[in-house]
Image (cartoon, rainbow, N blue to C red):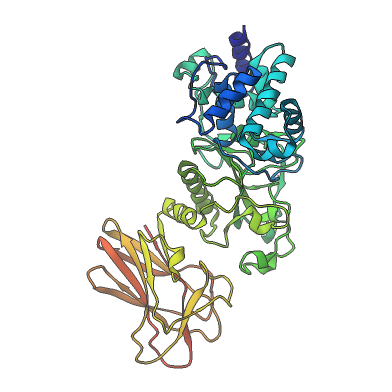
Length: 499
């Protein structure tokens, strides 16, 4: 009867949510392990399961779906959603009730793995009893999701963690999983949120930045809340934990409600200060990621999927792929937000975004480069600075021009396969810059393909084409020379190579 009730529940979920498959396996199984490997909390799941008569495999599966078996330290991402704690992501009234049922303090239920798992097990036991012994109903209630299709998706995730979703699920009358076809990003699932409005028709409404968020929850809970009209929050996209699914919730052309802050350019390297005081939702695209700001690492597959998405957004909307245009929620709203957290790998992530769009960027500072494909050597005579805004990376280098100077700033890039590449450069401008800064384009064989002059007095903070050349395989380079009449300076900021 329990299995039949679960299948009936999920069949209804499939009818309400045409983008999800129907599982055909029991929710409560006798499997020893779930997920991709044994849990680090196996003994705690077994002990709590025995104490409260809850199958350990169910506790283990819930822990995997909620936090990927991490002890998270909660913080708020969405107003009205209490922070989650522990491997079981307990929060709010459920955390308090579970702690009371397990006879542990709230502090222990938040921060001690054993207490957290025991509190969850005690809560599930009571939920099951109150549901007349139906585990599926108890799990749905534990999820805290109001949206029926969200609860169904959460339960399916539990089944998947237990290895209980069969490939033949579509034969039960439900469409195949992850059909894609979202309006702006074809591989995404379209789940329309009512929580949006129109962007401003003037320049403040032009898409200009991408903001990276973490949901502070699992994937199904995240998109379900953003679809709930009660929440009054949304984002344009949500990326799931393993990168296998992306949801689009709001059209990019519309204004999602994902950041509650007015723009302040001092929080973004003094970039575009003319936007100061503008509500940041006007000109940004918001991307949520299932997970938590406190987690110690993010799955590579999730980062890869996110980078491919951001490449698509920035390419379609003409948004530069740099540090002023791809930023974290906490950076622009530091008073009360911390996401995506201290362990979001920003430098590697920006490299992933650029690589997805066929770019290599070489910065003057080595810490901002992907050492596998980019390197810079800047002689000692070149001084580091960050006084002029709109630089790439952590600043820029400058040096005075001299007629006989030979110590140029070298930007090297690896070409994996010979072929044509477009080369761009950027600088910070000023009246003291050289009107004819010379860039020498040199192959891995040492052949100089061209010397291109650029006027660095204007148009700083953006990419400027030097030209297109055919490069051989290997480490090629662009050298910014400082030779020239005395009285001006040249600025070495970054070089970009594109396919």
